[in-house]
Length: 65
Image (cartoon, rainbow, N blue to C red; front, side, top):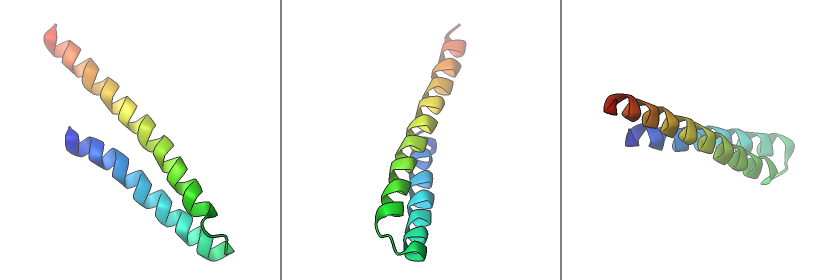
Protein backbone atom coordinates (compact mmCIF):
# COMPACT_ATOMS: atom_id res chain seq x y z
CA UNK A 1 0.00 0.00 0.00
CA UNK A 2 2.67 2.53 0.96
CA UNK A 3 4.68 1.60 -2.11
CA UNK A 4 1.69 2.23 -4.35
CA UNK A 5 1.18 5.66 -2.84
CA UNK A 6 4.86 6.44 -3.29
CA UNK A 7 4.63 5.52 -6.95
CA UNK A 8 1.44 7.55 -7.30
CA UNK A 9 3.37 10.60 -6.19
CA UNK A 10 6.76 9.97 -7.78
CA UNK A 11 5.82 8.77 -11.27
CA UNK A 12 3.79 11.81 -12.37
CA UNK A 13 6.35 14.22 -10.92
CA UNK A 14 9.27 12.57 -12.69
CA UNK A 15 7.48 12.21 -16.03
CA UNK A 16 5.89 15.65 -16.13
CA UNK A 17 8.96 17.46 -14.80
CA UNK A 18 11.10 15.71 -17.42
CA UNK A 19 8.60 16.59 -20.16
CA UNK A 20 8.53 20.19 -18.94
CA UNK A 21 12.31 20.36 -19.01
CA UNK A 22 12.37 19.04 -22.58
CA UNK A 23 9.78 21.60 -23.65
CA UNK A 24 11.75 24.38 -21.95
CA UNK A 25 14.84 23.39 -23.92
CA UNK A 26 12.84 23.19 -27.15
CA UNK A 27 11.19 26.59 -26.75
CA UNK A 28 13.92 28.30 -24.69
CA UNK A 29 11.40 29.19 -22.01
CA UNK A 30 13.05 27.97 -18.83
CA UNK A 31 11.50 27.34 -16.25
CA UNK A 32 7.96 27.89 -17.54
CA UNK A 33 7.14 24.36 -18.72
CA UNK A 34 9.08 22.74 -15.89
CA UNK A 35 6.99 24.59 -13.32
CA UNK A 36 3.79 23.87 -15.23
CA UNK A 37 4.74 20.19 -15.33
CA UNK A 38 5.40 20.09 -11.60
CA UNK A 39 2.09 21.82 -10.81
CA UNK A 40 0.23 19.44 -13.11
CA UNK A 41 2.05 16.51 -11.49
CA UNK A 42 0.93 17.64 -8.05
CA UNK A 43 -2.68 17.76 -9.23
CA UNK A 44 -2.44 14.35 -10.91
CA UNK A 45 -0.72 12.83 -7.87
CA UNK A 46 -3.33 14.25 -5.52
CA UNK A 47 -6.20 12.83 -7.56
CA UNK A 48 -4.45 9.47 -7.81
CA UNK A 49 -3.79 9.32 -4.05
CA UNK A 50 -7.38 10.29 -3.18
CA UNK A 51 -8.77 7.61 -5.49
CA UNK A 52 -6.43 5.01 -4.05
CA UNK A 53 -7.36 6.02 -0.48
CA UNK A 54 -11.06 5.68 -1.29
CA UNK A 55 -10.42 2.26 -2.81
CA UNK A 56 -8.54 1.14 0.30
CA UNK A 57 -11.28 2.52 2.55
CA UNK A 58 -13.93 0.66 0.54
CA UNK A 59 -11.96 -2.58 0.78
CA UNK A 60 -11.56 -2.20 4.54
CA UNK A 61 -15.26 -1.52 5.08
CA UNK A 62 -16.14 -4.60 3.04
CA UNK A 63 -13.73 -6.67 5.16
CA UNK A 64 -15.35 -5.43 8.38
CA UNK A 65 -18.86 -6.38 7.24
